[in-house]
Amino acid sequence: MIPEVKLYAALILILALGAFLRLYQLGRIPDGIYCDEAANGYDSYCLLKTGADMHGRVLPLVINHHNIDFLEPLYVYLSIPLIALFDLSVFSTRLLAALTGILTIFSVFLLAKELFGVKTALIAALFIAAAPWHVHFSRTAFRAILSPLFITTGLFFFFRAFRKASSLTASAAAFGLSLNSYTAAKISVPLMLLFLLLIYRREFAVLLRDKKNARYMALSALILFFLAAAAYIPFFLYKNPRHAGLSVFSTAGQPFFVFLKNFFKHFSPDFLFISGDANLRHGISGFGQYLHIMALFIPAGILFSFRNTKKKLLLIVLFFLTGILPAAVTNEGTPHALRAIISMPFLGILASYGAVKLYDLLAKKKSRGKIIIALLSVFYILNAAWFIADYFRRYPSESGD
Image 1 (spheres, rainbow, N blue to C red):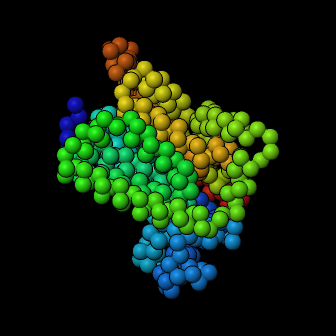
Image 2: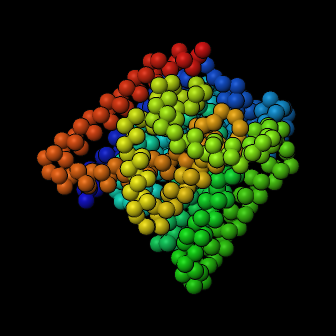
Image 3: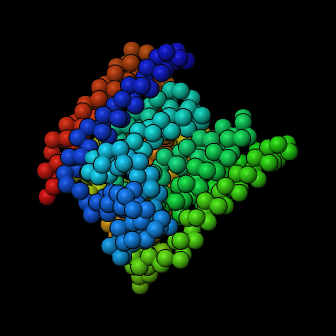
């Protein structure tokens, strides 16, 4: 049992680390600004000044990027107050991503605490705070960074609803906003909601017996319906010319086998722990999507989860797998860190579960176990320090090439 003062102190330190990694030199690293980032920032600026996007469309339902991409507008709209406050710059364009990243560390903590307790929650927050995958996308103005925050928040309030039914409305709002955040969420989130309904159908049935709870459920369904309509109707009205060309099902041959091949590429040790996504816009070379030492904790978490029959663990595994699907159905640049970003927080939670289980096993071995725990802790710190030093010293020249 961690004393409350130590718990809050540890959480504040983790959040401070996460904030530093996401805010330090935000306007300079990555070097320059990618065209999609610039378009997001300029659309926010135009909406702030004129009420219309850069193409002159008033309060658009979709954002037109380069006349080839029609994208969700949520990142652009949420950036408007920040650009109003700091004026248009690389820093202000990326600031929403950084703040979202910091909030995601906290939402992952809340979710892991709700599911597995304080110890697992603190480690999960630390793993996300220092994960190359999350650090980098928290420093680039890509709309995808919003999805992990909304989905983990939605899941946290879902489980909280079993104690306080009114939390279902917050859960529905968060999941609904996730649908409006990034195209990948339109694939993953409906499946995630289906898993929730199937796995927790008995708990839902118990909630429905109370008329007050039933009203909360009806309101939640209404919120989700309207937010889903806001997400899907423009998606079908504005046919995105890129989607057909990117889909594995638009190619000749055996698309299902291509899909499976793409799916399992995201389990590659090279992708997860060694080299990561080959696209330098998606991260630094020489590091996987997670730190090298996570090659111990992630497999441990997956292994221990299969040895446990709890619904909560099953759900985290399913959410992780579902988060990979949007990347697997595309035929470009797989394994693709950006399109698989929804899987990132759930893999971090699984890793933290594995780390706690390993700790519990090693702690039983007395002095020998304590030595191993100390060595693993030191190695994690050194590995994180290596990544941080490389990211802020070497990556600027890489990203500027």
